[in-house]
Length: 141
Image (cartoon, rainbow, N blue to C red):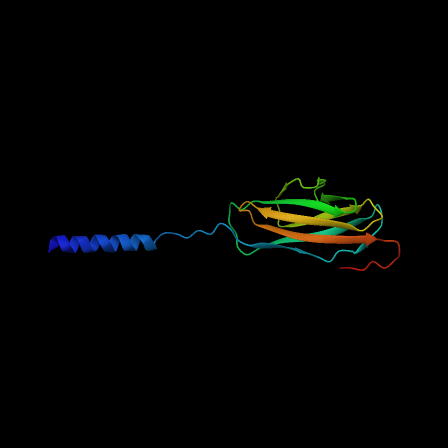
């Protein structure tokens, strides 16, 4: 009888220990929110892009990088700390609110694609398109 009792207690102990495991979430989805930016800029003009990284949750070891690609036109993108980005190079993103500055270097339509990636492999992308400012009327998108 004692053996049966101890066997039952051991089985309960195993079941109870399985329920106590912690489910630690390391990957939280996130998005990039921006304020409206001008649709039109002239050669040499700079557009400010105010950005906020919005996370659904916080994981202490989450790390983010930023990069960009320019499929149309020619220009320069830099971070508010003065870092000039090279296309497709990754840069650490240390803050959740930051500003990007795009300077036009062409008369043509210009598009930049900005990518934010976390260390879990999740990526968000946002595109910005600028037209030549040949006529006045700083419309916003």
